[in-house]
Amino acid sequence: MTQTPRPYASFEHGFAVAYEEELSGETFFAALSEAQPDPRHAAIWAKFALIELQTHRALRPMADRLGLAPADPDAVLQSGRDQAVSWAAISWQDIMALIVRDYPAYVTEFHEVKAVAPPDMQTTMQLLIDHEVAFIDFARAELAGDPASEAPLDAYLAHVATWAP
Image (tube, rainbow, N blue to C red; front, side, top):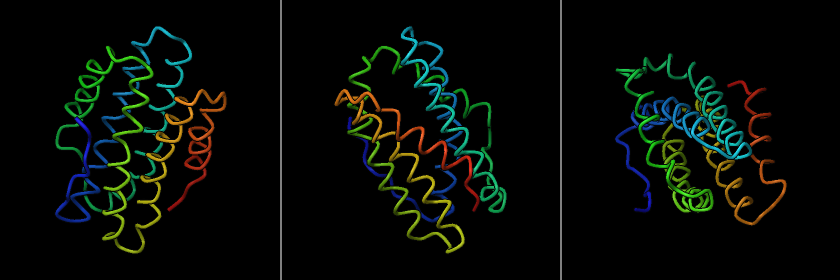
């Protein structure tokens, strides 16, 4: 089923969901990396996991400021690992197509949440948008056979490494 943007009642609600999904996303992609027999694909999933980790770390000060934390962090981490099981049986090409098809919904969600974010939280919301765009751009390049397909992932990692709100 194609992912569609989810509505949020407030900025805080949308941000809380995004923050928690970065945490589960890290374990999701790490589990895909661990299960992947192809060394190149395993390394790419590990890079996705690193992107989720770095994005989560960048969001943490805002989450702390808003008083947000997962109610059950272990359950959030486990949900990422559980979801990876269903993806492990999908071919690489089909996963890339799925990312191209479904991840734009997250970009739309983040734009909608950014539109209602306080002014001092705009750049943090842009970081969420940018990381999803990097995933989509990578998947598009990968499907096209671009030998430099990882460039958007590397550019995002360089950006988040020096990012400050």
